[in-house]
Length: 241
Length: 340
Image (cartoon, each protein chain N blue to C red):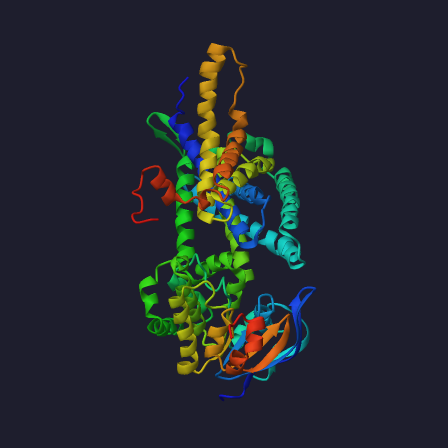
């Protein structure tokens, strides 16, 4: 149901091996919202996203997904439960064609179901129809992000976790990616967790947000409130008053 | 003495090059999937050779004429594949699971090399009716068909090996591009983490790659038994140098370029050294009084020299060369218009 917690994080401490990055993180993400994570470079934004997907070491605390404790679950099991993680790079197979990437996205599906799913996503992302035989590495950065989104859609996840999806993109391509993220929530009712370097852009489209500073939460609340907080914006996000 | 090698020798060189191509392709495959530089790879070929020998020795009534190549290749390939699979499952995977580095795994393959080499020698020494001295002679080649071509005697294996190399490459290419598992294999080579998240059983991909690598080696070894006029497992120590040279020339991580690299190395070793030897003997020995030695035993100098040259100009091997750009620079292709 919209509004209920889909993800809940309690007292989370995590990092890479002995490198402790995240300290005492508590947050909850509601179903159907766009939840934004912002912060300066090295604040632990991407690490938090990776931790939610099981790619880091958790020292203490727990992560609940739809009420189930997934703290110790491997990434592929989280993917099966309905989490989709779209890293900034390496989110598609560059040496495979677009068609092969889409097939890989539905690797565990029956071929008839997969064919139907591919037809559906091609209707959503029609530009891919002309590029089915092209290698993914020949796509532009924005097109690659959209292909990654299409691949995730084939698996019908409940939540999309984007790690800096507009990084390095031209303004027009970045806007197209943002439009698609908004579309995921508006048309499909999906939940989105968005890590973004471009804080203004992210906070403008987000419902709620946290500000991470040195691995700790410095702000938690409505995205619009953080956007209008001149002090925090100026000090940590490079936003001009 | 003619500088250009004779037709039978040219065909033998192409056959040797084809076998090296298959071996380098297999080596590149397991390196690309599991990051193991496998020094036991030539022993998988020796398994194929021994199998071919046993089939000839024990089942001659079923196994002669052109059929000797087909049955020997298939059975030798399967035994080579099983050896590759067991190497991965019994030694390499447990070590990798314990966090052993790529360097550690490579050193482990040295151990496997010695174990397999000695095991095969033991088998040949103790097997009733099969003895190494007998095999070193012409006993094996007397079981294969010999053709008459332009007045030359041409050994059957010199025709079959290149055909087998092309056929296996086509089959492997179709497997990699047309089947779901083949696409998953390519995906795993590129990004095992993403493939795993999408539900690919990455360990199964690794197992298949080791079986297939061993299969290719087994086929090459079974047919090479005719080139070496028998089987001596210690030959693997010499072959592995050329196999690595081929893979490195190709780029180490590219399966197709591994095949091409191995083929090039084989040609350079055999044809290249024969031509150099002919020139040396005709001009340097006869006219300049240089020492009267055969250079043919120094063929590895050429293959390793090729490795050095390729690495100097293309550190990523032939796979890393921008062939379109090179063709444009050489004037073989029109330059791209409107470029900056």
